[in-house]
Image 1 (cartoon, rainbow, N blue to C red):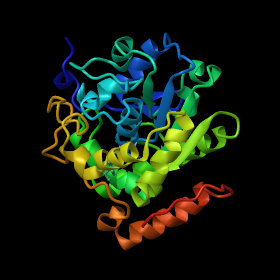
Image 2: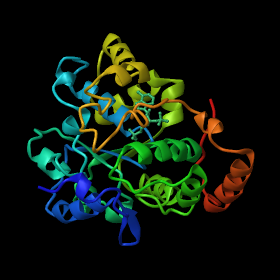
Image 3: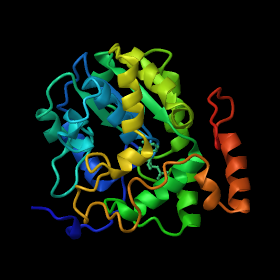
Image 4: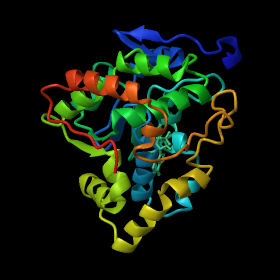
Length: 295
Ligand code: A3P
């Protein structure tokens, strides 16, 4: 059996120009057999944008707010991660085989690598976007603790890689923009992490309406509570603590790290922020997609 120690911190592998974690690049081969079903729901995000949060919200909605049912297995089993592969852990495709419909699926893939079957089957997509600065900081800490990634280098070095799309899954700018455009021709509910922080009840109601699974208000209130950062940080079924330390080492940085908007200010220097803003304007020029970087 392959061990992660055999390939510690393997370099990213380009697939159609998109750099990917070595194991995930390998998993794309298996993903060719994937068949989407019309009642699937896909959660799509650039990494570190609130995927786990949205996954727990969706599962809670599907289980009618039943907390016990949502404790049946870790979030990465309840919501299969399509391109996931890591030594010693079931792949996304293996997990999928054990998943009864209606299925909630997760991907971080850019549109160019997303299995066409999801688009052909008109699968409803919930896209969560988060502002680039908080994503960059969250991603830097995640690179350090999730050892399927290459070494991130210093923060300065990592930020440079982030800005030039040389991190796993490529450019944040391209990702958020292409899924934003997709909503014009496909059923996409495009939500923002910052809005979810500000008014989770309102955003969860949007998800409920989009998936067509109405719930009484008291259940909605319970879902808001049970999917709060604090509740999810303490819940072993959502905080990734069940994964082996060789895959994720929470002593380096916990998966449920801060869960805040505007935390980037604790990491960016003034000079880095100015350079980032100037580059951001260029990369997002002409787009009507806007983000809040603080609440
Ligand atoms: P931080 O590293 O900034 O804390 P993903 O699930 O896409 O990998 O995103 C992980 C980020 O979402 C982490 O951000 C994590 O703390 C945050 N997060 C997870 N659950 C959350 C919740 N219920 N509320 C707010 N943030 C949450």
